[in-house]
Length: 215
Image (cartoon, rainbow, N blue to C red; front, side, top):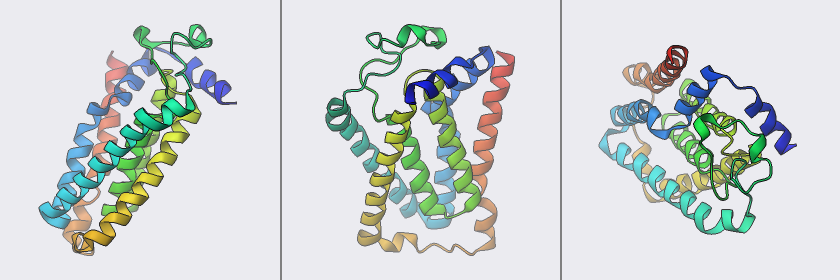
């Protein structure tokens, strides 16, 4: 089933989606979203909130990357779809010949983008922002399958890892420094600016679509 879904997604390709998915897959193309999140956190919780968010995300990502590299991937031992030693690799569409190498379960991209989504949702507590961050995460995850860097199961594994790590860092934050969450969540000015990350997510994806159409 996992392989069939991979072939279904990877097999429906064209130049437009090759460009879009390549842009969506690169973590630095979403930098405007990261900046907008920190700006809104700063406006709501001051610089202490920014520090708290950065610590939670930073520590969480360090742990997910360490767990991937030293525990989960070596233990599971599942090759990426496009790894040259994977028997299905010759059957896949590779954008510009790029292929993933080595083990890919769970997906680090999936783990990190969902960890970011969970932490941001926890701090900002706004349905529009939560939906926009989730759309961003789903787009990144879909792109990793489209580009044949991961099986769908790898993506789900990254999601599960992110959920566990996010729950842990949130639990730690609530016990060590709950005062960081004492910003005014009802102030009308804050309510107006809180959707900025959602607007930036939409703008970033629109830029990807435009770049894919032009290129």
